[in-house]
Image 1 (cartoon, helix red, strand yellow):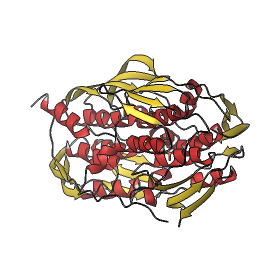
Image 2 (cartoon, rainbow, N blue to C red):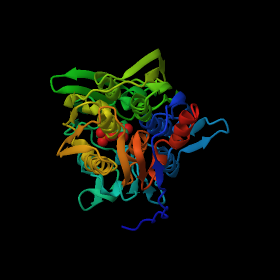
Image 3 (cartoon, helix red, strand yellow):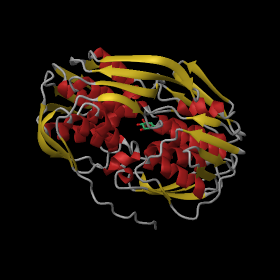
Image 4 (spheres, rainbow, N blue to C red):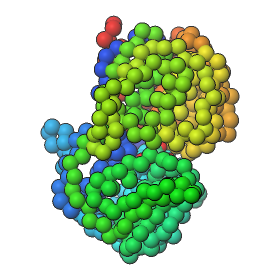
Length: 449
Ligand code: S3P
């Protein structure tokens, strides 16, 4: 399979040692999951949508480039508002080149769903991290719907997907708790005659359902004996929308933990999405004794939103309930840093999925925390961590971010309480979800310098 080779980017080492306290206000970047979906659904509407607060990180820009390659017109105004002229459901065009998904699993899996029911063929490529991630979980239901998919060994990228029109509606029970798989099937269902149904035994983030309904798709959600039943009527006509993207709770997570562990900190985080399928870390930090209040609850873009105020507080180890995993799945790396500073042994298990994220987040965090002097036990499905009881962490080591943005940012936060510098070998991946992360960190520390 021929494809373009991305230009090599030199590693960006970053070194961080104890600083602080952190004080001030944080304006969050737009939510990554919602930003991807806003671009995709606007690209399928008939007419012009406007998107405010879009996350301008590399992952979302990969989605924008792919939608352009399939016919949508997507432009950014000088005031940061994005205008999207959609092609209509069924109207995606044959891309002339491979779709480069970069580091983004969400772009890949959701777009595979979209292409699956269009009469086009697309090749999906990505970076080394994305090319090692399993795509079998979407290949299986999309093949049932009629797509013809040739993947690299192990069901990985690069892969070529030939869509089928009309595709075959399915009723699909998710074998893994994955919003990406759920969304891939629902998006394939958008251009499929009849009703496509996904049964979700364990609830996962529901941004696709909320936003598709907002765009006028006929979508219902019911509680059934085996979980939530999400049904979408295909051959939908989506109406253009004005969308405001709320702030990303997965980005807020770094400040919630930094504010909790760095003595004297007091941070206000504005406009955080408080969708209950995303607030697991907030609940867990509160169980550990964190001092976090939420104020000004409101609705933005069909999603609950609030401002969060975090003050330093001593944390106590807990056993993290396994059933909370889907609502904090991206927050485990930063939770592990909080655990490293708590009093006692934190046990976090039942999170197998961490093995197949941008890196193997169990192994990568075990190696990074061990390197900086934290006592960690690795399990197949999580970590047990002996906390410092609030004392500074030893630090004094280089850690590998493994092309994983959340590892780089988590270890940067660990650096804020390290006696000797922590050097992150490559902080480039931070640009996938939080381009202003280090700038914001500097501003919060400078406020008290
Ligand atoms: C996402 C779903 C989650 C999450 C990812 C974004 C989404 O992945 O980890 O960062 O936008 O649907 P899974 O569906 O694999 O759990």
